[in-house]
Length: 88
Image 1 (cartoon, rainbow, N blue to C red):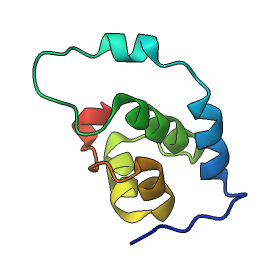
Image 2 (image 1 turned 180 degrees about the vertical axis):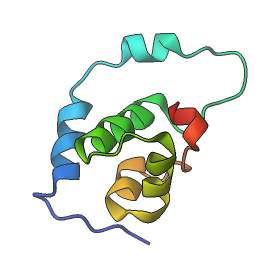
Image 3 (image 1 turned 45 degrees about the horizontal axis):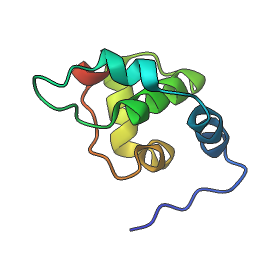
Image 4 (image 1 turned 60 degrees about the vertical axis):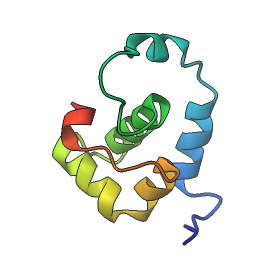
């Protein structure tokens, strides 16, 4: 199933802006030991920032948005939905 998002939708604009950032420091903060993150760190960061833009500050509400809202599903790019502890 392909998710259709209009070209001028805020999620596309946010994603385009966030794609331009350099994520070297973010990836250095993640340990190569232990269990693997539910989704790629860059994508988790983008979901977190977009959630804040939408007024969602609760980690449980972010998880719910990733499961139910098409714009968040599009932003996840097919990655598994992170649970609220991943965001926290």
